[in-house]
Amino acid sequence: MFNKLFNVIIVITILIPLRILACNKIAIVNINNIFQQYPKRIEIAKKLESEFENEANELQLMEHEIQNKIQYLQRYGSKMKINERNELENLLIKQRENFSNKAQEFEQHNRRRQTEERDKILIVIQNTVKNIAVKYGYDIVLDSGNVIYSNKIKDITNEVLQLIR
Image (cartoon, rainbow, N blue to C red; front, side, top):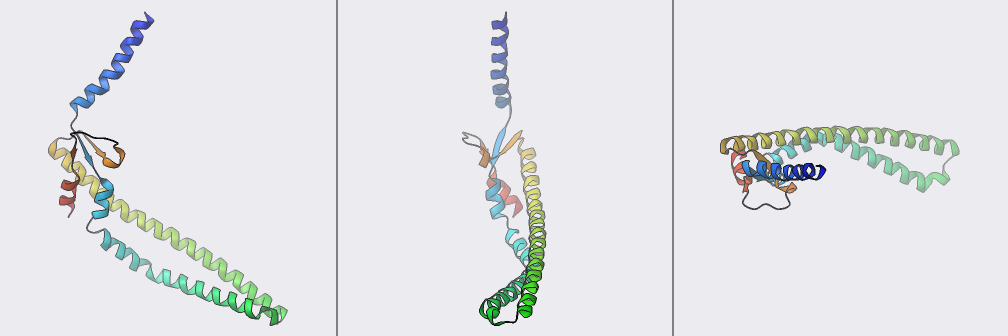
């Protein structure tokens, strides 16, 4: 009895997925390729670069100022009065902390904006893929980066690229 039940379970677990796959119309798409060729991607990158240009320049100036003070301290620190050297060292500590905090805020803000813009692009790509899938009756569309092998499965990457241009 147990063997019959076991055999039935094995047959079901093998046949049902095969039957499902046989019934579905499947396509693949190369999301990474589409993302890299997205026409507005360069425009968006330039927009973000100009958005963060002032902050980046300010951080570079701060870093340059700190480096100059460190070099000055290394060069003339032994010849300075103790209280002057201590004042300069304390000032450097405060400037480093300020620089570190601003750099961290800059990095977080920049990363958040990069993510926002990337997500907008991915939504456009996803909606385009979905529209093509509906139009041509695909039940499943897989990212080709996650497919090891495909034979006779339609690649809709070019169709997506044509629609987003």
